Image 1 (cartoon, each protein chain N blue to C red):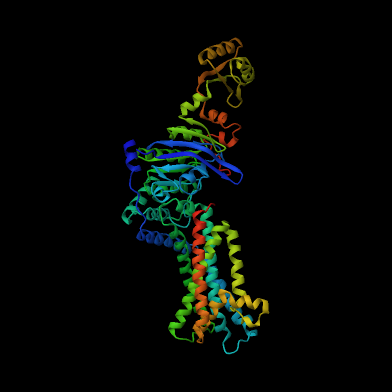
Image 2 (cartoon, rainbow over the protein chains, first blue to last red; image 1 turned 90 degrees about the vertical axis):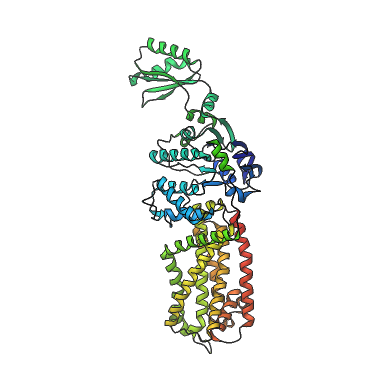
Length: 329
Length: 270
């Protein structure tokens, strides 16, 4: 049985910039893989290579066993692409956009009309279906873009930052939608800057930074890799915050990180329970009133930051407040 | 779930047959025609501009230009037709640069469609726009005193030659649009060859009135050859020599720029 996607030592330069450096991974049929990385990490370049738009300098990629260069024509009938930019025609209606894509996937008329209607319904665009796309909101465009990539019912889907810049509700809708697709037997490669999105949707996560794979595994494995737990402390009185942090510092493996707005701090620890008890005792002896004290696993955000080094401010933002799209890679 | 995924993965791709390629072409042409109809301001501009040039030379400047044996309006109209189809081609460059910038070309290139259908669908839609513009300009021309003086067949042949020239040049503009990638630049880049071909030709004045160094260019460039042929076809007179050269230019331009454009499209990166 062929793998859905095989990427073998792909390398790509642009002028002097190394966009992808010896990237390899596989995706099994029916799996979702998230490529997680900051802007400029090479995510879009990889998607463009896999969707036959760009030739790699070195390495090979195969979709369902077919080479993306040698068998590009066959590969194109197996893939669906939704871009970072909502690439739909503004002057056509939503329905006209979808039907055109259906024609170009070589579906017969009855079938593409049926699928366009179904896709509009699924994306809650029925009412707007016969309006020109230029009247659509950003979220509606993105939904239409995603719908367009589905008309071919392609077994392999490439979703390049499908939820960047969307409000939380639309994002949740799209997440559910992507899950439905996978339940229908699609294999998905998605890129994202949001840890939460990768954790929510993907079986497997690859962290890409400056063109290199810096980590790969499930969300749990990645957290494991960072090692240790995090002790989280919340004090009752704001005035106690700094003193409490000082009292606990000796039990941590790194300095505590304070959040003055929430009157809380966290600190990475080893030996979870022992450290928790020792810290609790020290705080109690110090006469600090606590609201909360506990151990938790590090968030994927923290993993991501430690893997990608400096990590831009943007890439630490959580999806609850999605940043507007910055420069794209 | 995984069985379903495997099954879908092994689904046989549909082979691209000439019939399917034609269907692709039809779909893309229809899309572009809809875009033309839904931007009437652009359509309007590409018609109004040649009409203004026609009226300017018919009523303002034409009085000062004496061409023996022919009404100036009859002399100038083939040039105006040519300007109209060149101007129409400019919108090809603009539209392709827009498609590239908007990511539409990425999407089309990732589909199993025939690649040439994307460009051919663009140029065919622009050909329809040029036809529409020509009909309108013929109407205005007739109101301003223009008359066909030759047989219906010859006159249709003249219009046909203009259309052939316009269509060939659409492929030049397709290459320009894909090469410069930015809609504003595309528009500017497309104006330059149009100015050179239109003004340094027999469109507005006889080539013999130009300085010698310019004459040798103006006499042999395709726009002059086309205009002279069309003039002869509309007015009567010897046509063969200019005509075969004009057709050869058109076919040559078409073949070269068809492949140049297709190659640019294959490698297009916004």
